[in-house]
Length: 177
Image (cartoon, rainbow, N blue to C red; front, top):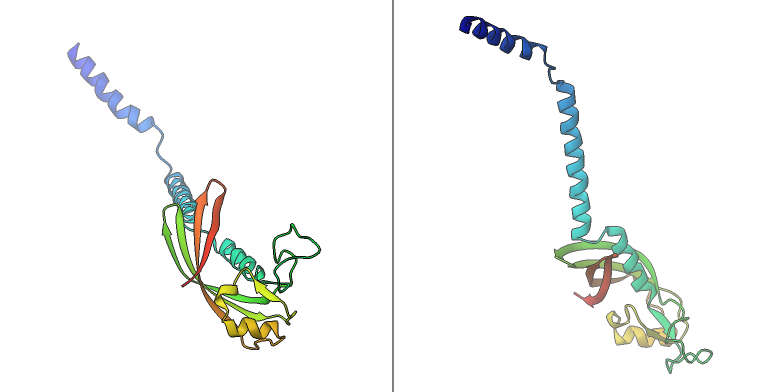
Protein backbone atom coordinates (compact mmCIF):
# COMPACT_ATOMS: atom_id res chain seq x y z
CA UNK A 1 0.00 0.00 0.00
CA UNK A 2 2.81 2.35 0.64
CA UNK A 3 4.11 1.87 -2.88
CA UNK A 4 0.69 2.60 -4.37
CA UNK A 5 0.31 5.71 -2.25
CA UNK A 6 3.77 6.93 -3.16
CA UNK A 7 3.14 6.39 -6.89
CA UNK A 8 -0.23 8.18 -6.69
CA UNK A 9 1.32 11.13 -4.87
CA UNK A 10 4.13 11.27 -7.37
CA UNK A 11 1.72 11.24 -10.33
CA UNK A 12 -0.49 13.88 -8.66
CA UNK A 13 2.51 16.13 -8.07
CA UNK A 14 3.43 15.84 -11.76
CA UNK A 15 -0.08 16.22 -13.19
CA UNK A 16 -1.38 19.08 -11.05
CA UNK A 17 1.32 21.63 -11.99
CA UNK A 18 1.09 20.62 -15.63
CA UNK A 19 -2.66 21.28 -15.66
CA UNK A 20 -2.54 24.56 -13.76
CA UNK A 21 -2.83 27.88 -15.58
CA UNK A 22 0.40 29.45 -16.71
CA UNK A 23 0.81 33.20 -16.06
CA UNK A 24 0.39 35.42 -19.11
CA UNK A 25 3.58 37.46 -19.65
CA UNK A 26 1.55 40.22 -21.37
CA UNK A 27 -0.70 40.51 -18.32
CA UNK A 28 2.35 41.07 -16.11
CA UNK A 29 3.61 43.78 -18.47
CA UNK A 30 0.19 45.47 -18.48
CA UNK A 31 0.05 45.37 -14.68
CA UNK A 32 3.55 46.83 -14.51
CA UNK A 33 2.62 49.65 -16.96
CA UNK A 34 -0.55 50.42 -14.99
CA UNK A 35 1.45 50.60 -11.76
CA UNK A 36 3.99 52.96 -13.37
CA UNK A 37 1.17 55.19 -14.70
CA UNK A 38 -0.51 55.23 -11.30
CA UNK A 39 2.78 56.13 -9.61
CA UNK A 40 3.42 58.95 -12.12
CA UNK A 41 -0.07 60.33 -11.56
CA UNK A 42 0.32 60.19 -7.78
CA UNK A 43 3.75 61.87 -8.05
CA UNK A 44 2.19 64.68 -10.11
CA UNK A 45 -0.61 65.03 -7.56
CA UNK A 46 1.95 65.17 -4.74
CA UNK A 47 3.97 67.80 -6.64
CA UNK A 48 0.81 69.89 -7.07
CA UNK A 49 0.33 69.68 -3.30
CA UNK A 50 3.95 70.66 -2.61
CA UNK A 51 3.84 73.90 -4.63
CA UNK A 52 1.22 76.08 -6.26
CA UNK A 53 0.56 75.43 -9.97
CA UNK A 54 2.15 77.88 -12.42
CA UNK A 55 -1.22 79.07 -13.73
CA UNK A 56 -2.31 80.05 -10.21
CA UNK A 57 0.96 81.95 -9.69
CA UNK A 58 0.48 83.79 -12.99
CA UNK A 59 -3.16 84.67 -12.19
CA UNK A 60 -2.17 86.03 -8.78
CA UNK A 61 0.61 88.16 -10.29
CA UNK A 62 -1.70 89.58 -12.97
CA UNK A 63 -4.24 90.44 -10.26
CA UNK A 64 -1.47 92.11 -8.23
CA UNK A 65 -0.45 94.27 -11.21
CA UNK A 66 -4.08 95.14 -11.93
CA UNK A 67 -4.60 96.13 -8.29
CA UNK A 68 -2.25 99.09 -8.88
CA UNK A 69 -4.91 101.75 -9.46
CA UNK A 70 -5.49 105.48 -9.31
CA UNK A 71 -7.54 107.34 -6.69
CA UNK A 72 -8.47 110.98 -6.17
CA UNK A 73 -5.76 113.02 -4.44
CA UNK A 74 -7.47 112.77 -1.04
CA UNK A 75 -7.88 108.99 -1.43
CA UNK A 76 -11.65 109.07 -0.97
CA UNK A 77 -14.30 108.15 -3.49
CA UNK A 78 -16.71 111.09 -3.38
CA UNK A 79 -19.50 109.14 -5.08
CA UNK A 80 -19.17 106.16 -2.70
CA UNK A 81 -17.73 107.18 0.70
CA UNK A 82 -18.10 103.66 2.14
CA UNK A 83 -16.16 102.06 -0.78
CA UNK A 84 -12.47 101.29 -0.24
CA UNK A 85 -10.05 103.68 -1.94
CA UNK A 86 -9.19 102.68 -5.49
CA UNK A 87 -12.05 100.20 -5.86
CA UNK A 88 -13.09 101.81 -9.14
CA UNK A 89 -9.85 103.54 -10.11
CA UNK A 90 -8.09 103.17 -13.43
CA UNK A 91 -5.36 100.55 -13.78
CA UNK A 92 -1.93 102.19 -13.68
CA UNK A 93 0.01 99.32 -15.24
CA UNK A 94 -0.48 97.02 -18.19
CA UNK A 95 0.74 93.47 -17.53
CA UNK A 96 3.27 92.22 -20.12
CA UNK A 97 4.64 88.93 -18.79
CA UNK A 98 5.90 86.98 -15.82
CA UNK A 99 8.87 84.72 -15.19
CA UNK A 100 8.90 82.32 -12.26
CA UNK A 101 12.48 82.45 -11.00
CA UNK A 102 12.39 80.16 -7.99
CA UNK A 103 9.92 78.07 -5.99
CA UNK A 104 10.79 77.09 -2.42
CA UNK A 105 8.16 74.78 -0.88
CA UNK A 106 8.09 74.38 2.89
CA UNK A 107 5.20 72.26 4.09
CA UNK A 108 1.95 74.24 4.05
CA UNK A 109 3.72 77.38 2.79
CA UNK A 110 5.70 78.15 -0.32
CA UNK A 111 7.86 81.11 -1.40
CA UNK A 112 7.77 81.95 -5.09
CA UNK A 113 10.18 84.50 -6.57
CA UNK A 114 8.85 86.06 -9.76
CA UNK A 115 9.88 88.76 -12.19
CA UNK A 116 6.92 90.80 -13.43
CA UNK A 117 7.19 92.99 -16.51
CA UNK A 118 4.66 95.76 -17.09
CA UNK A 119 4.27 99.13 -18.80
CA UNK A 120 2.46 102.24 -17.62
CA UNK A 121 -1.01 103.05 -18.95
CA UNK A 122 -1.82 106.68 -19.81
CA UNK A 123 -1.93 108.89 -16.72
CA UNK A 124 -5.23 109.96 -15.20
CA UNK A 125 -3.36 112.54 -13.08
CA UNK A 126 -4.50 110.87 -9.88
CA UNK A 127 -2.61 109.29 -6.99
CA UNK A 128 -1.53 105.66 -7.25
CA UNK A 129 -2.49 103.06 -4.65
CA UNK A 130 -2.39 99.29 -4.13
CA UNK A 131 -0.52 96.55 -5.92
CA UNK A 132 2.96 97.54 -7.06
CA UNK A 133 2.84 101.11 -5.69
CA UNK A 134 5.61 100.40 -3.17
CA UNK A 135 7.91 99.21 -5.98
CA UNK A 136 7.63 102.52 -7.85
CA UNK A 137 10.05 105.32 -7.09
CA UNK A 138 8.67 108.56 -5.61
CA UNK A 139 9.78 110.29 -8.81
CA UNK A 140 7.73 107.90 -10.97
CA UNK A 141 4.64 108.39 -8.78
CA UNK A 142 5.03 112.18 -8.83
CA UNK A 143 5.57 112.22 -12.60
CA UNK A 144 2.52 110.02 -13.16
CA UNK A 145 0.45 112.45 -11.05
CA UNK A 146 1.66 115.28 -13.35
CA UNK A 147 0.67 113.26 -16.43
CA UNK A 148 4.13 111.95 -17.33
CA UNK A 149 4.24 108.31 -18.35
CA UNK A 150 7.47 106.30 -18.00
CA UNK A 151 7.96 104.81 -21.46
CA UNK A 152 10.33 102.00 -20.55
CA UNK A 153 9.31 98.48 -19.67
CA UNK A 154 9.12 98.20 -15.88
CA UNK A 155 10.64 95.14 -14.20
CA UNK A 156 9.53 94.21 -10.68
CA UNK A 157 11.19 91.46 -8.62
CA UNK A 158 8.55 90.10 -6.30
CA UNK A 159 8.48 87.45 -3.58
CA UNK A 160 5.06 85.84 -3.21
CA UNK A 161 4.25 83.81 -0.11
CA UNK A 162 1.62 81.10 -0.57
CA UNK A 163 -0.22 79.18 2.11
CA UNK A 164 -2.08 75.94 1.47
CA UNK A 165 -5.44 75.29 3.08
CA UNK A 166 -8.27 72.87 2.36
CA UNK A 167 -9.25 74.88 -0.75
CA UNK A 168 -5.75 74.87 -2.25
CA UNK A 169 -2.92 77.41 -2.53
CA UNK A 170 -3.62 81.08 -1.71
CA UNK A 171 -1.27 84.04 -2.09
CA UNK A 172 -0.99 85.69 1.34
CA UNK A 173 1.83 88.19 0.87
CA UNK A 174 3.64 90.06 -1.89
CA UNK A 175 6.99 91.59 -0.94
CA UNK A 176 10.19 92.88 -2.54
CA UNK A 177 13.01 90.50 -3.09
